Length: 399
Image (cartoon, rainbow, N blue to C red; front, top):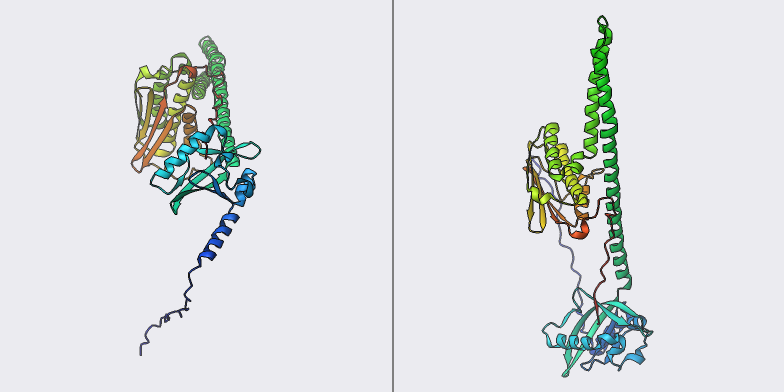
């Protein structure tokens, strides 16, 4: 005998009778609304069509320093700086004549109020209006945003200072790389070359019958040649001297050829050489940007082809680096201890440019848009590249 599988039987939950609630009386609804308005954390002010205050809650008293009895019946102008009286009356009139019955005041701006002591302060405000018995009333909900604006200005200033510090650090790093590369090339490289010549002379003038010594000289000669080549490679990796001696275009050609030789990736460079006549600071940044993009391709892309395109478009410089590799999740979180694209973005940001990265399983495209340098950007690379960006004040209007 086969038993049928048993399943839990779902029984409907008992329903609780919901008693019908009686509508609130007008007096009770008015009392609840008055209590809510008076306990609100934001200041609430209502004015009539003559712009006289008819409602002033407790938060408004704390915000402006006026008592309710002093303000109710008084013109709203006592809460507004003198210079805004005319524009405020016009703005309220336009709002009353417009269709919407509620909106934020001064869209995307901060309005200005005035406390009893004469102190001005920033306010975020929204306004609504209604008509009752032929008269129009305007209600404004106000929030003191002094601390918020101060935090925004502090954050903006901090970011500007951080960028200035990053620019100065990169400037100092490039200066030190240039110095070390020059010393490796001029001092150590020349000394090793002279030593190689001396070993070759000794080997050539060694009397016959010293085969072991001759073989030892040959090993020394080979080791010195390898050391000279390594010294030149290290110096070029630090900073290619042709970037300072010949300019950006030859340095980029060397970079692409070297990357192709070391990685086995077929690299192609298309550039408008006339657009690469840039100040030293911008030349260095552009070289490092392309270098970082190609390094990322060699390390992570598993690509067989890479292309670098540099062209001028009006007063902009367009750089596109693309590959046919495996791609990555451009919107995903950054891997720990992975700073390649972060450094690239930071360099572009310091030049007031933009970066757009598109990546699929068929390859990655890094597009960089840089403004061409202005006259005041043409300062030497080691002469204060990291000047702080001034913080723009937030525009304010009257409520």
